[in-house]
Image (cartoon, rainbow, N blue to C red):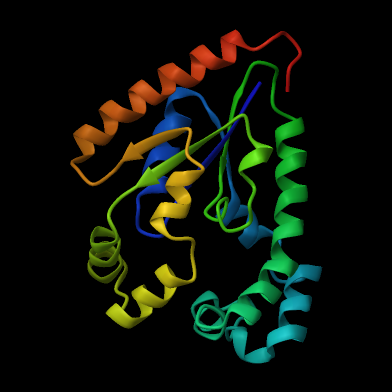
Length: 205
């Protein structure tokens, strides 16, 4: 088994890379999807968030309004830290459960946006960083996600810098070009991951 941390700044295209790796046969554990699962209606996670930030972070249906919560936390480091302390332990526990259920010899890709921020890089066999210049991040967030420039800049500022992410990278995927170029790079990445998996001792995890 090879444990891979996959990360990248918001708008870098990390999800495009994880989808391609899943198509090749990787077991992808998406921290964002699991984060939604652990704060679904009726969970202890959602109850803690409401207790910390108030009922204004709920939508009319009683589910978490992620946009409203984002407006509350992303410009305030202390509030963001409080949110992370609620969500991240639950996400980590669920990801460990899913990893334990994977078959031997799998490439396990942990799709995690905050590896650099939370100093998690040592927990993986290697870290893959999806990288683009900040100007491209900003353009994608405004053009493709409908954020204002101010909202996009606040989300980017709440994350690690480009330099901090690159400092933990074992492999960098440059996603500033075309999708065809991304396909080529991910194909090469998959080949490297499979090679590293096969080189690991039997029973290594």
